[in-house]
Length: 458
Ligand code: 5GP
Ligand code: MG
Image (cartoon, rainbow, N blue to C red; front, side):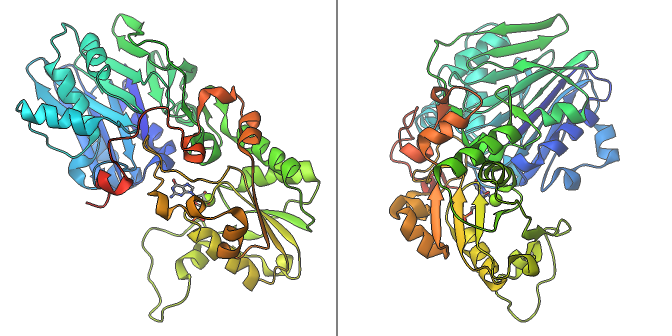
């Protein structure tokens, strides 16, 4: 996960990046950072927490220069501490370099051991830092060739933004796991993980950075390198299912429409008799709309989300069951009581939140609950940047749907089929990585890894 936004040649670069990151907040809430360059020196501000916690007007004004990159972080490798906040900056013999990364590299253990044996000293536990070492050590002449040289040694998922003294450079791995788009921005350029970040900055979308492409932007304009051999694409399908924002386009297509199509397909594959279709907000809303439309069963909002729940609130003294869940989502009792309902959810990972939602609906008087899920059972961990835990934490790894229905407390449970999901996507099914459902990884998972080895909880 993680959100990226970069700007080249804008007189309010830091403010553009701030706005861009604001609209990419859903891609990571652990830390946020911006690095800018004014032609002479670099400026940086990074902090733990949300974009709105880390930055204020004064801090943005101090980030001088017309070019910069920003990052919102959701840690999947490296622990959640300030020194791991990005963008990551170094000064090296060739000058200054800042980097922001979305994705997970899979051959870092071996690369890091080799670099350390050769004398490299690491400041962080992030896999992104390894790429920086490889760039600096490269014998190539110019920065884009150094970057290509470094990236030819790493495996896995990456969308990168690099900031140097003269260039803004973007790179996307040859399989294109993570999205990255390019736009014109008030006479300069912008790059972002999702197009909603272009909307807010009034940048004009041009195109995707292609899988395997390195885009170099400097005062002479924009250039593109394709240093890697063509390889089958492996776009993360979970971006469409859950992760990206519905108002965004990723991989060139709209997320909202993709989710609605999943819901329609789900209704065709797994009909049920019910009085209404309810989403689990907010992530289930779009597939639920599609399901209702296709099944002609009324769509109702039966669970209401409280939008004012901050991250810190006062817990009652007496321990109240599911207190924080109840504070965030409350059922509309009169609507649900004695009704048969279809509940649509985008995904089940561990099953714990689904169980508590089912209990909420039962307590509100629901009679029959048919749960429908707009992605297939998630059975395998992700090594490429989605925070899916070890196999034994994934409820579908060791339970069939009918058993999961019992575990979570639904009368029936149905998942969309793999073929149905792929057919519903706005781009060709063969372009996607579906390894969390199939266990067929497009890149070899890290040697002997389980997620816990990746020191997530360090
Ligand atoms: P579960 O029932 O597995 O505990 O939770 C499923 C819910 O988690 C769904 O509403 C889904 O939208 C959400 N979800 C799916 N993937 C992720 C993820 O990677 N991170 C987080 N925080 N939530 C997720
Ligand atoms: Mg959800």
